[in-house]
Image 1 (cartoon, rainbow, N blue to C red):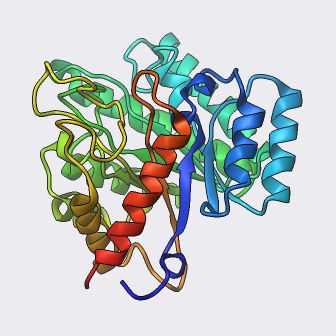
Image 2 (tube, rainbow, N blue to C red):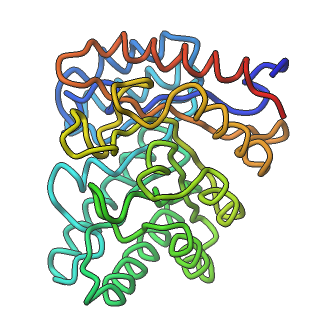
Length: 305
């Protein structure tokens, strides 16, 4: 591709995945956010909960000064606590909703324009009840976010039968869900992730085109699903080119091609497209980030439309 990628999207990175010691809302948040903010390769960052209000204020100042676009990932609030937004136990569902509402408050504090979350586990026998619970929770989050400003509420599509085993789920169900939510709320959208597409047993075209009118955010990442005995098996987001993994330069080229052809990546209103990469074991986060940037640079150079 001869044109600069910045014409088509805002390159971003998920802070709490690149630096997983911060995923529980604690740890070296301030210094690692600053490290990303000082890297002008990235024009966007996705952060998550920050339990210390003083640190949260300092992070907000860093992000404002560095002129970065900000997204907020509510996923760690659920994944690190075991809470389920479509829990059939009403008291447990309530806990999850209340935590995500706190996340929306934090997202506004941090200047975020989007708030992302994921659906929870489910059983086939009670799938319809879980769907209704998820719909009720999501509508409540959309209404709450709208009361406070213009943040968009975003459901990230995860695997349904490998690792996270989330309700949403395959593309046809994601499409139906978005349509159901948007009957009442216009501040809702879906998020696709290259690392989840192989786990969904779908191609890029199969995952993207059916939901394109609802797609508002996207991630780039990798996964290992060839064999359960492989290291990093499941939804672990290892670096590109990891042993036995699914995604490297060629797969990222195809993902970018579909995102451009579908109109998601565009010159008129370039969206955020973020890396979701995580060090495996004791890998250095800086090397994993460098891997991601090199992979995207090469994929963009190879891209032909």
